Length: 424
Image: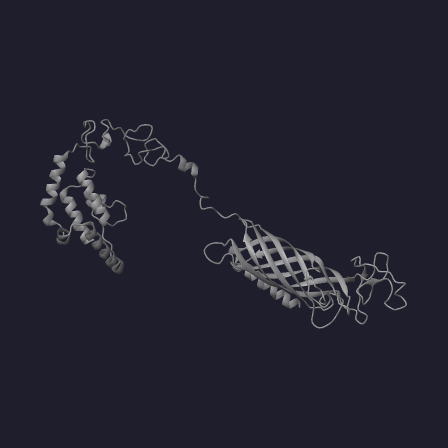
């Protein structure tokens, strides 16, 4: 026995070491009803719950894996049974105390996310002390005599005693220690609990559990009556579990929010949180909102405005230079005049749909070959989303911006951009 116990302790210690990353200590308080399932209480007991008694458990658990856990617990309560058959009026109630070791299997952490509601099972081995008492006499000490008419009287049943007897009632005070007349049995035993339940996660540290447990005793004397197999009992319980695990990091523990609040990436003297024009070149004078001067209010800052005195309301290009319908028409003519230099397929069907079809085929080829082309520096502004690939949508956006004067592309660069699109 001692060798087996030592081996079990070594095994448990090894599991703890191997699963230290999941280790979690918790305490569980439990209350529930105990229903005796032995010899006494089986005859003509119309109400299954009439002999149910309260029981309490207090235990410690140690979670040593995603699924596995071990626990020790102590229990206290009462077991009781009463026969209501004409042939038997046995009754008993026993105070029970004990405790043991349980191995748990939890299923709350199976998968990528901890489940709010999950099942669990457990089995174990425990030690139980019991001491059955019977309710054999009333409060005045008169022994109960059960008569065939269903009454309880102060005298044994007989024709002579019928006019002399008095009807009495059970007081359900279990005053007499029960003993076997032929055997001096041990009033302690081992038992095996087998349980199943549901765990309800109530937050970081607490969980609610609802379960049922079947407990098989290794003795048939819990009720002081030996007949057939060993006694057992079942329990339905509600438990509250509180764990002592460290609070998980939220992912921002190493972030210095004070530095972020005071950061000024472009070094213009205005904090990023207040800077409406981030990315201002070094040395450019800015206002209190972090924006450079725009003297002619054309939307182009003075430091990059090639026409600093544009007329009020004039439409300008990306460099601040005034553009008009004549300039836009001239750009269209330049575009059309160089159409022969573009892709033959694009000339035949100059549509976004055609470009998207080419893009789809291009991506399929790249996925198979793993090839990656580098965008020429002069065409980088067309990579609007900065993903290293010129898409059909970015082509059309760049062309539209060209006609609106919102970028620095010219016709030659646009042609090179389209050629590159078909080559990439």
